Image (cartoon, rainbow, N blue to C red; front, side, top):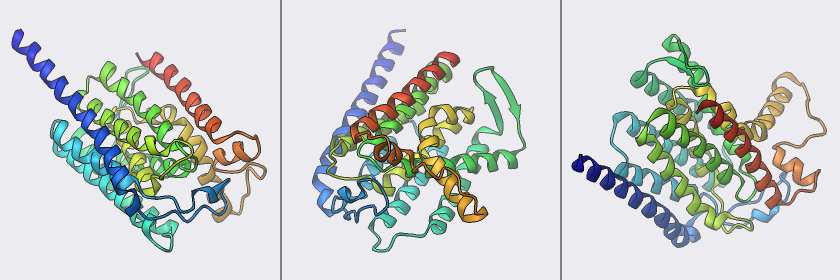
Length: 320
């Protein structure tokens, strides 16, 4: 009994040390390396897009690498986890190469890369966990054909990567909303699923994002770029899959879905079907509320996070 208590305290102490090290490593490295990061060229069509011009961009390469290294040392090893971490690096690197490129990568090129990453992650999940879809609110389990689960998982991952990327347009917005989303899954992993490893993994990502937000709070000194937003979007999708109930992604990431997703739908309908919707609404919505509703950047961040927090609280209450 005494040994078990000691082992538990020791494990929690190691986890606590890992979180502190990840946070401070992120802060120190971002402070040290910010001048070697590529510079943002501004966003021509975004509200206040010119304010970001000249700022260090692609900070995601720093805090994502800190997260991966910390995960290797402080989270129990598994082959499944290693594959996910490699894919997070792949998403980060594809974003960073785009951030540092003189000419932005085309949407189709990035889309294909996202699909490859999504395919590998989906196959990995089904291989290690099977293809049972659980509805946590009711406890209902549905066995799906593996090929169908892979396709649905790929859609989830691709959507998560891209809506998270689209939301990254206001100082502190994407990072803060992602923390609210991840905390939702952290509570479920610990209180409902008993998945300590992925709970610790989630906290490591959160503290690394907090280290980044130290420099990104409005007015920002640096930007995460696609290197950060694409990797974060992939990670959120992985958490949704590992929960065993990927449909939880909808309420747990509802702000990302509405803010970034509406823009994707609007552009897709116009480009492929020549259907123009939301003619009087700017997308992403964070541009609309700043331009048309007069919200400041700070109000936009706080109100979007509040909306996500309210939905997450309701979700956790229902499930627990």
